[in-house]
Picture (cartoon, rainbow, N blue to C red):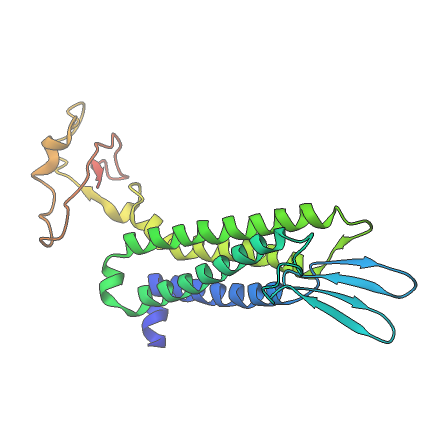
Length: 243
């Protein structure tokens, strides 16, 4: 399996994407479960920590936390916005897990690999879901927390930003094979047509003129070639047509 991944550029890129998504998942879990989204200095050495699920007051002799997972609406009084932030961060978590499963499926399941264009489309939709949810959480938390005097953003907030950035990078790596496949200017998808027939000013003006010189469809599932005439010659003077 390892040798197959190393030889296949598509599998290799998907493998890198999966690793990126796994790191992104770890960062997301650390960010959402910690109470260091923001902190507020209090009297002396005392300070208060703010997270999505808990708020903690730290003193020299005690560490008292208030949980926002009890379901008691009284606990949320003045912090109703945290319900929305919690839902969004959970949707983001589901999106990352789905990205990992889909990327593994592209690598390991032949049926999905054969329909990778649709799979990559779903992957980009999941990216949109995660990016939107995480960005909204960052904006909501940042807006609400700065209403509290002397609060400062802390490292859990920054980890959420890193997780979002890494998710975008992993998706770009994951869809790169599809971009390369559909690049109409790639040299390996150009066809050398009859140079004796088309030379001088007698250049082909339409796809119908050169369609008979193109290879036949390789299978019933092959949709054929989407043609346009390229008015250029290679180094030997032969006309090249990209398909």
